[in-house]
Length: 377
Image (tube, rainbow, N blue to C red; front, side):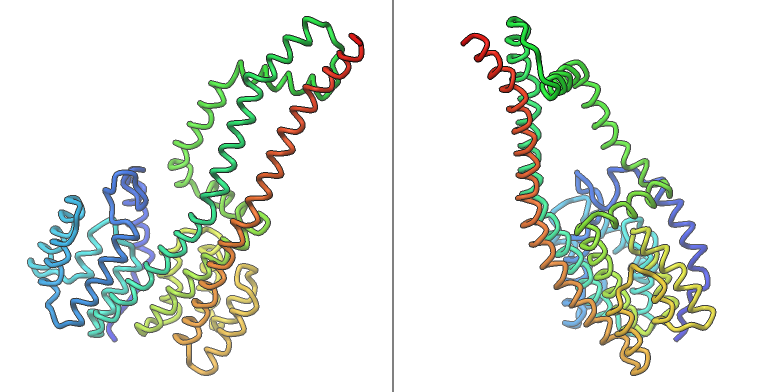
């Protein structure tokens, strides 16, 4: 097979420079639908594989998909791809020119074109984005209800600090009651909220809108991703999500007869999670020095013992595609189970925290009232 990846690092730098110039609202997850989201890619590759399998030419298949798209910007994007293909470019060369598509998609399509397996590759890419979207839906589903509860609870606490506590404070000042330490603390927090609420709001908004800027900084990515991994339960859940994506990507590339070291290079570029990228960088160097994939994965805590053992079996039996596919199914099942468990655990935990906060505020306000009633009595 005449497929070479000698210039992959050079192309990676070019793509990195190009992505850094991309505005926040033009990234994969957008508010106005200007980009090819993962959902659009899932439909695109799935429909393309079905049409190619039915014997329709690539040009006609793209025209049919373009007509089925609802949004004009998506139709225009596919129109550009279609025009390039009519001009004589291959699908992989056309995709490479578009910033919405990754190196992973480009090399996968290139492999399919060079080996005559474009139909299978597009089908596998469709399956990849189906799994990725399913994981995202599971995560959103798991977090939506707890986030709603947390937001509502925070609003209740803020309301109490802003309006309820000052009412009690006026009563205490009029009666000149000696306040317990806990009441003084709550009153101080209430005053701080009233005086600096606008400043806190500005800081929160600044953090939200500066996230896109900080995400481009390597030090921020390192800190954020490593911090997430250390969180109880959530860290293990996130690790499982990325291992699921890793095993699925390697399975797809192995099925396309891509060498192991090149698969690692491609996956490293595709998955935007620093601990995994850092580990794969070391794994790649170890493989180039002559170590097997299982030996290269072993020093990294990110990869569990089960994966390393099965990868070793795959190398000994030459069943890499099958083993990575099985691993992907196992990790995907774990993601589904843990996403449900995450929602189940977070809900009572958040309620407990909010109950404690509200309880502390009420106790702090009623302690002086009891003292006042005893004095009046």
